[in-house]
Length: 80
Image (cartoon, rainbow, N blue to C red):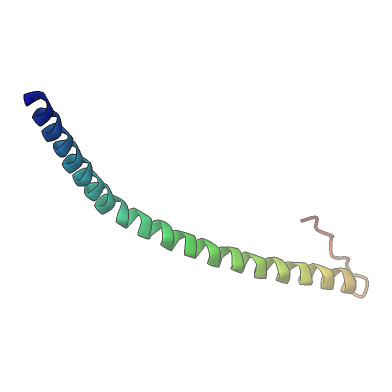
């Protein structure tokens, strides 16, 4: 009978320790998750900006191809 009480106490202690560990991990991970969320948002903004830059560069390259024959020196073609 004493064995059962000991096992119940050990189980209760284990559950308390698991809860404590979970709480500590959540406290430590919360700022990291916030930073990752912020970085992810900034990365999305960078991707959007990159798409705009790529579109602009492609438009300039096309324009350069069109006007290169009308000026005294040819604009070299770029392979991007």
